Image (cartoon, rainbow, N blue to C red):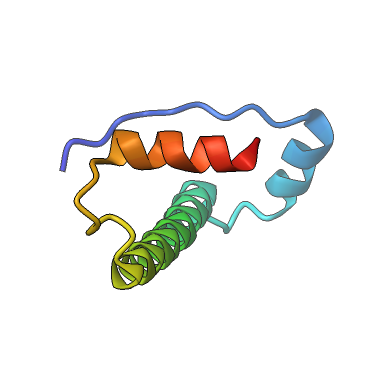
Length: 83
């Protein structure tokens, strides 16, 4: 694995509190927090994708686009109905 270095700035008060616990591997703590945060974000993205697929499937079942018209004509038709 090709490790890269990143820097993190913390205020003096936080750094002083961290120094009290020198036994803690702060790099490992931060690495774990980053990984957990990314995993949570990936779950959210996957859930959004799943909902989008479900919505597209609902639209397909309505068969709105199977009427022999292309999408441009349907959009124009819907827009004219809104007026």
